[in-house]
View (cartoon, rainbow, N blue to C red):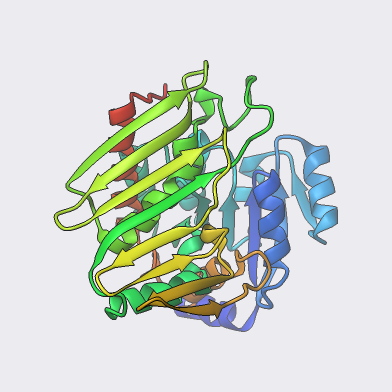
Length: 335
């Protein structure tokens, strides 16, 4: 039966549903339209008018005001979950239990224990699940990562990366950036990107030092981190209250690679060896969500429940690092 289903899926478009229809969902939907074998067939919001307007914008035939309804839509193969952080675990687990495959926005969850339950649900229900760390599939990142692994800049000794911008309207209940009940704060929203970069290149650090400045809600407005490895260090930063160059620098014993601004969605990277600069332009298809979408399709067609490029274990490792940073800065969530 499974082979017949997957054979059918190889011939037809893979049908997507989206839960949570904020800004990132709009960006994702635009890129979904650029992937030939993808079709958006359903969207869901707690506001029916919002769901209907979203569906109309992206030529999607089904709009729901209930998350349960979209999970029960038999036509949907895979759900993209783009709701606030605090709902990631519950919605993902429920979707997997409804035999839906899931791509869930980062961070995977508020903590390691929730993330582990999500991954266990994927395994128990034999359904594909991936955290939506789109940077991992960015062409500039993948090519730069390959050069680093091949030793072109020698042994990595230092990483410097930040993710910072001046956010509007930081206060107020329901603001995902600062509402502690929603898992707000710069660390979980954008600090996970620099931590991701350090983890992918250097692994799990031996020690973490971190400090933050907080909003009155208890969410962090800016967080700075030093990750100590046996033979390397990473200096990382995230902020809602100031801008940065948004360039990531990886320094090795033989040279340097810069992921050019905006580094998490890089359109190019620069290789510097012996003071000679080589520019490597690799413009993305759309904004760049296209590549994680294609990875989901690849895994589904191969009957996999996880990606080899961003695995369940990768997500668990990263959220464990985030948990340690949270412990260092004293950031606590009620759920």
